[in-house]
Length: 421
Image 1 (cartoon, rainbow, N blue to C red):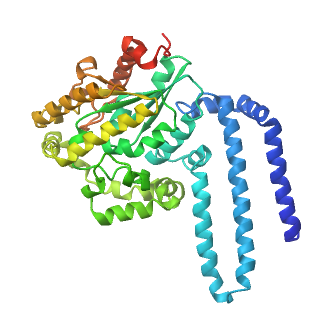
Image 2 (image 1 turned 120 degrees about the horizontal axis):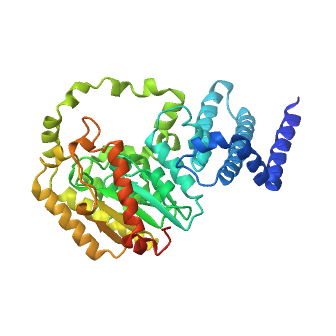
Image 3 (image 1 turned 180 degrees about the vertical axis):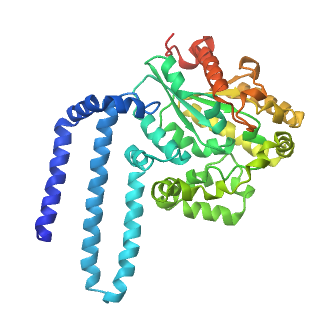
């Protein structure tokens, strides 16, 4: 087939596909769901609420991404004809390579806005936090319930609260999406806030411990979410004064390249977990068995000062932004493994509780649940050798207690009567 006829044929197929989707996309989605319902029910646990809408939107995204590939190929071909008239043959490959990389990044930039892209690059691989966050965020925006809950914060929020259990117990008029991100401190919440609000939540729930405010580490855990707005839209103090300038430049330049943003997910997809996890396999796990020693060393890192004050300002700014968007924030006063908690300076815990008390008084859109209203946790309620993450049993007990809070009088005030009894 001649190139001209080949182009016409491909464009005709594409036009027919879009026409078919426009006329019968919903019916095709219903037929696919009927034939794949068993597989979809397991696949969509905690991800989507309406299988027909999920499939229909993925069909649209598939057509959209394929259309972009055809456009990419057409632009590259047209460019090849143009440069063949301007450059010598031995240098044309450099322009082709540069243009190919540029167009690939453009395609990735558009693909990252679709749930289908994040879904496909994660099939058969372990959970990659950034990939899972983006997939959950995009699917949450499709939820059509009157009351939407987002679980935000670090992996501690994820370890304490089971979003699937909440969805099973709370009824059809509410939906909970887990948008945690490992290592997300108070400043990280502020950086990630625009992505969280895209899910249109009515309520944001965060499990908050001293880790989010008083640890010197952090600020680099949410690097993949940084953009120019993160530089200039802060709580009044430049956060990049707290990190090396070279690292700041690397982060901002790197995150301007779409391929860099989704590097981990693409690495697992095309390189495989064995290669991506080589550094983890070289870690000596025996040193983790000394829970007491690790607790003492970690406890020394908690401190009050410029960093903790900045983190407090960041959390309050995060709550203010949520309030302006009409979203209430529910802060659950948490703690670490009692083995670790007993070794942290008591002044840090006192400062933490005092800050939450002042926060509740200053911010009308926040509700702080004291630790006394939540399940008491013992060292046996934590994963083996883990200082911060609860085990599955505590996760279930904690989630059921949270369910009682949401269904009780506090829940009625938070949801304005929208949570099912």
